[in-house]
Amino acid sequence: MKKFLLAALLSGALFGLGLAMSGMTDPRIVLGFLDVFGDFDPTLMFVLGGAVATTTLLFRFVLRRGSPVLADTFQLSNLKHVDRRLFGGAALFGIGWGIAGYCPGPALAGLGIGSIEALWFIPAMLAGILLHRLVNRA
Image (cartoon, rainbow, N blue to C red; front, side, top):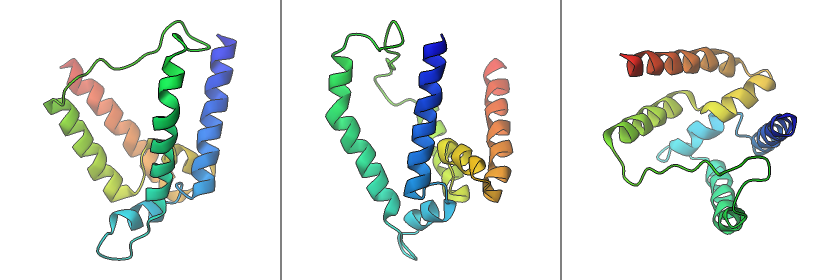
């Protein structure tokens, strides 16, 4: 369990460092990417392109291992189609992302560097998570 937690901590730190180095902790860059008819900023496109290229090249090699290094099995989704819940959740995520310029990873990294916007976003994100849990229990 200690190895698993250490790996999670190091992975999260590496992810946060990458977000900070690429400028993705600044919501203005994300909002600039979404402003295609105004002050467009293509920075996010290159960050996303790098992530997709890395995943495309390496994901199949990782799955060939049979199991992860620090777990018994891979935890992959068995979802094979887009349903209303997935579509609705993606739409809400996109709307929130477009309004705030943050998604959870960059918001947490932004909190780590003292971003004022992240201080407002994180409680709203946590309220949304709580609301989702309450609605799913009902």
